[in-house]
Length: 288
Image 1 (cartoon, rainbow, N blue to C red):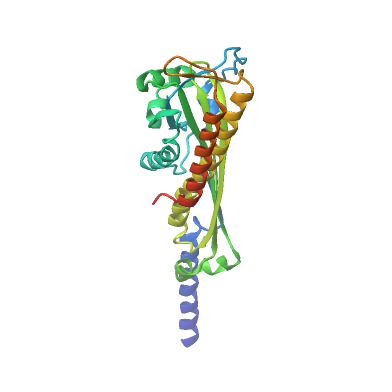
Image 2 (image 1 turned 90 degrees about the vertical axis):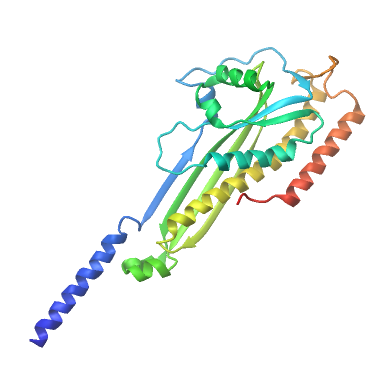
């Protein structure tokens, strides 16, 4: 009788452990989620061929109104992307870095819903008329999040282990790229990338929330990296205009022109860029 009870108890224990293992089976192992937006797919939808570069030279009237927007994502994905509130917060942060530049009258943050309704340069031209823009900065992104088991994950075979053992490694890789276009000429003026990799370990039960928070943090830090690079590219773009008038021509609102005309103005502008770059590096923070 005692032997039969022991056998029955062992059987029940085995069933319970198997149930625990089955409960977490859908979560253990390795998972991968990704979300992205493509600048090329947005500007040239439905397989349109990229047009040959035009001979026209961009005429940049300063001070200028600049649009700033995320490129919409059209891919079908169950991976959570940035919320509209997060996107606006990130773009507002970039706006704060550039708004004091002497050649900028205003920077307008544009919700990507305004771009989503109409793709291509024709869509950009509609947005430019709505906001009275001459230049737009488009931010595309690519983010991949993976979760995989570490050597400690074998302890997940019990529910207690799944809640107490940090046996899951989470990694988020984020790439953002900002391209600056002159809308009338459809010319790319310059671009700058930003990259960030966020990694941590968590319990199996907390993996989902940890990944979600890491994704938001990684977006913010990738945008910080992009902003730093964008300031440097703006510096180089000014020099290129001065050295090669075919790159672009700067026309002031009073009708005069000639690029970055005087050496004194060029030095003043470059000093402003470097000052903003140092300030940005010192004050960079992530979104809450």
